[in-house]
Image (cartoon, rainbow, N blue to C red; front, side):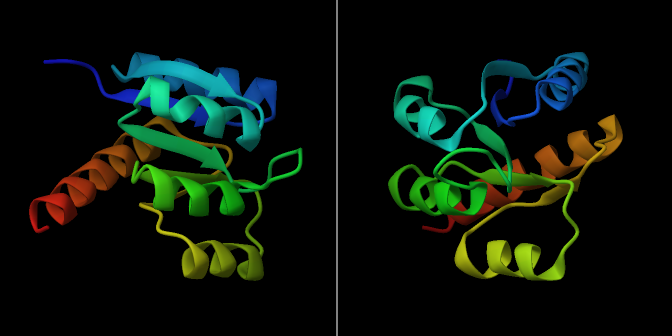
Length: 131
């Protein structure tokens, strides 16, 4: 059975490294880490990830919510938001304007990461089998 292919979009290198290690220890294949939404959007078609874990607040021209809207429209890859921001307005905007499959609060714990990914992939599979 092939490993689940994950793209991580996180602009903090320490957080990205820690999450990458957790993912690899859990048996996932981290195919790329991006620090900006713009770079990720350029590469998603050629990388064909199974799931994307993306920080809501990214440095650069585009935040995670805006990038998720484009990914939803153009690729349909399931997205799990990553955030250290528990601000209600930010999370509400993310929920109301994009299709996401879960939220992880920083600092991320391995067990939360594993179950959120499993739940997201199952939900995505069920939604697509109903089409």
